[in-house]
Length: 160
Image (cartoon, rainbow, N blue to C red; front, side, top):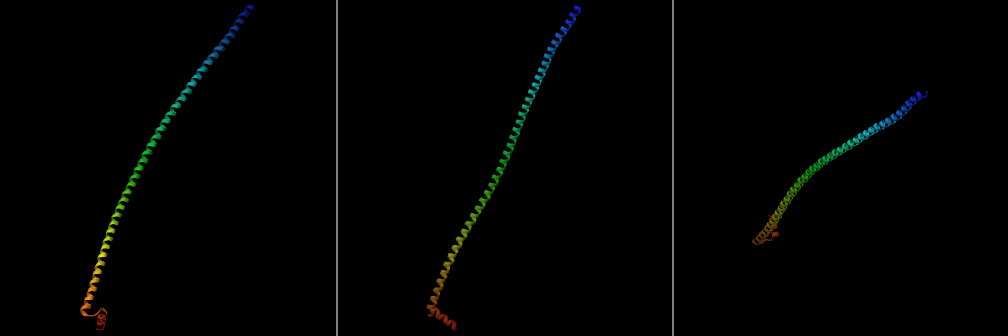
């Protein structure tokens, strides 16, 4: 019976060694596949992160461009409003200047008219003085010619 046991024992030993070897080869293979999957997952994660970084950078650039466009539009709008306001102020200044000039001309005209009126008044007062003087001279001459004073002449006229 010994000779039958040796092949069985050799088969069992060979099976155990084969099983152990398969176990280690299987474990190594599973480890290699797992490492490959982990590497692939890490590569995929790195690719996703890089894509996200690129997308974020692209979006940041778009936002910056949009902001610059908006700033440009706002600047143009404010410059346009400023030009309009300056134009309006300029128009108002011209109108005010014209009104001031018109007022000054009117004031000068009124001053001239007032001066003319003053001269006319002085002339009229002078003529009035001259007329009074002539009247006085005529009364004096009448008194001389008639020999009566003004009061005496009034009395005579009232009696008649």
